[in-house]
Image (tube, rainbow, N blue to C red; front, side):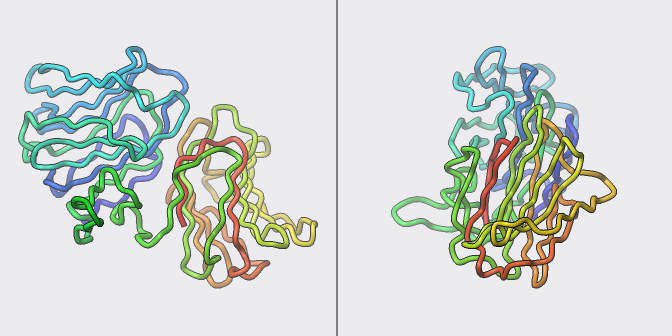
Length: 313
C-alpha cells in the first residue's frame, strides 16, 4: 500500500518507511529549488544514522554527488550534469530495485546508484537544503497495480514512465500534459468535463507574485475563473459569459489564500454534479456552482506568476 502523499511539508522533512524499503518501492518528490542556496539532499537513512543513499545536487559545483555513510563517508560518485535550476519546479522519482536506486528528474533518467548497504536496513527518508516541497509520495512495490508490458520493450518502469504512473496519483485513468510548460499555458480538454473528472495542476508560485489564474473555458467564454491575487490577499472566482463578467465570489477558508511566494502547490479541481470543488495542497479552498454545463467546457488556460510543473485531467 501507498503511504499516501504528504502535501507542502516543511523542510527539513523526515518520514519513516512504514513498510520498510523493498524492491519496487518508488519515492516521488515534487517541489521547487529556492532562488538562493547552494545545495540540497535526499537521504535514505538507517536506524544508526548511517546513510544508504545520499543524493546531493550542488549548485556551487554544478554537479550531483552520491555517496553512502557507514560510520564514515565512502567514495563519492559524481554526475556532472545538473537537471535542476534555481527558482524552478522539479519532480524526482527514485525507484528502488534489488541492484540499485534508479533516479529520474522531470521524467528523464539521471543516474543509477548501486547498493552499498542492504535495503532492509533503510527505515527513513529525509530531505533538507535549498528546496520547498509541494508533495512527497512513497509508493509500495507496484502501487497496487500489476506490472505493465509495453509493445516492443521491457517492463513498465515507474521511475521513467511514458504515461503517468498509476500508483502516483488517485486518478489512474487521467490524461497527462507534461511536455510544454510555457506560461501562458493552454490545452484542449478532449471529451469535455463531467462529474467525477479531476484536473490536477502542480507547480510553484514565483518569487514576487501579484496574481495568476486558471480558466476553464468554453466556446462562449469562461465557465470558471480561479484567480489567486496576492496583491489583494484573496482568491476571486467568476465566470465570463457573453463578454461580461458575472458576480465575483471571494469567500476565503480560515487558513487564508493557501499559496505563498516561492512555494510549490498542487491544485485539484474536482468536477461534481452541481459545482467545482477546489483543493490546494490537500485542503479544501472553495466550491463554485456551475454557471455553464460541464460538457461544454473544452479548454484549460493557466497564466500569471507561476512556474508550471505538471497538468493532468
